[in-house]
Image (cartoon, rainbow, N blue to C red; front, top):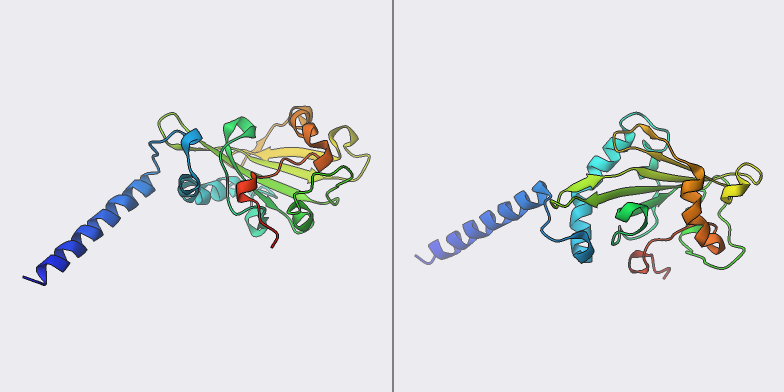
Length: 196
């Protein structure tokens, strides 16, 4: 009899674990995105991260197929904000990574030419299901190539890997608010690297 209790408890734990895994695999969330805590944000990202990368790479896009080899610019995504209330998770290429993670906000700060940032995006539908969004891309170019946009070229890849048409002024009109940060909107403070 004393062996039946632990066995029953073990079986119950196994079923509980399977049920919670099924829920996680189902990727349906009862909370609204605005009510998410960091654990919810992390669970949602675990649901979408593989599909995001596969989708962006599907058509062989030059950035969509390689950005995951770059370094993440934060510990993970944070609560939704700009870019259509989507969750964002930014990666930087080797040229721009070290400068980006300084999260500088003083005038005169500039990213090196050749820096490329790729921002994964996704949101939660009204039914609590994840919806993949575009991969937003910023490329720092030489002075004179895109002066009116802070020498940034904006582009995007759709979740199916196809190029997305982007109006440069549409992107830069918001990014211009961060002129002292070379037009960069950084991740929330809660998920930034501490620099220690």
